[in-house]
Image (cartoon, rainbow, N blue to C red; front, side, top):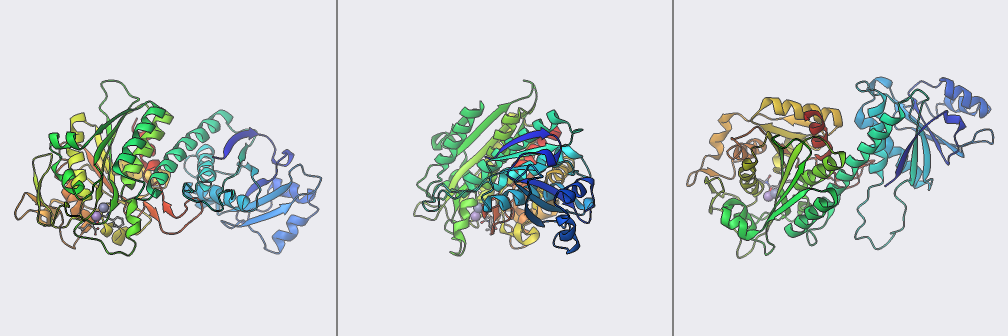
Length: 499
Ligand code: BES
Ligand code: MN
Ligand code: ZN
């Protein structure tokens, strides 16, 4: 990871391989640029006049400096209009700067952050967002790459220059926190990007153990035998098609007082979803290795929360299984008895996520949680409804939903609420059992949540369908193709506000 440090001082006095100067659109006559123009003997003025650069968002202009200036190079980057600056934009800017410099083998830089401001929040969160962008730009999943292994993908060091009036201590702590969140995001991405042949439920369980060891968390794993004894009938139904054993993975973090009720996070952990006997089409089935992205998000989040030492009690639960067709697989028409005692008629073995979540949601009730938030790549219908720019949120408590939506807006992992009216329950009423696991073509994301609602009535609960946001089809600055780590930043942001 790129080394980030904070420094106070004047930009043009700094020794660096590259001095990065962010410029708002049209604001080409600042004191700094005028001073610089003089040192460059009018070169900047000529560039601005020719409209080669005017500060539009995303514009980059690299110049070699002269012996009058102590930096070797200068990079002007466009910030766009001052009014539109938001957290995602600044994060993208950080990624763009890091990507641009890396491509040119310029591996150290100094960024003048003094012009950066968020409309809400001011300078420090703006710098934190830029830092996140720089750090995430260096992310690459190259565990299995044998060729071009040595290509450089991340900056060695970025120094963030704050004006002489800037608060160095607050900025340092904010960038340290940003790095912890990025490590959580990268952990989630790594897990999602792992191929199915390497990623058994046991692999996820062992990863959780490793996180626990490194960050002083409590980890317990419920193996098949235990799940059988306790009656996880829905989860075991899904698991029976694969030779790989299922696990219920549990991590606990105690940052709050002893008597404080915990927040519970539940993440879908289907390490590969072939659909089971209701087999999926071949096209893009490879992407179904991402069907544990909810589980990855809660693991990434609890790691980040532990690093940040947030004053909260937290429990993360990941039901981990594989959904495959085989001679031992569960079939359409099967009736499963869930941990709650409710019976479920399986109409489609590809609606497996709600089955494993049903048991995990029942089980987590024993913690008497203050709130329960589940994250799952649950329905293709969610992609139809919202595409790739927002996750769906539904639940049984408007207050919790509002808080999560607000946290999403603050941090950029955006959520959009869908209704969860009782009228939808009719679609999943069972013919031969209490409920069935699909509700027909209409409102697929909602009926999936209506199914989960049957198992989470004892507590305040929200469900996030991240089917459209957990996987990037193509690369963008800071988000290479593959797992996005969605949910980690959101959960941390929510928990920061909740404690
Ligand atoms: N994991 C899938 C949902 C999914 C689809 C996630 C595409 C990401 C991208 C889930 O298990 C599933 O197969 N859902 C079915 C439910 C249906 C059978 C009721 C779906 O959405 O088609
Ligand atoms: Mn499925
Ligand atoms: Zn699935």
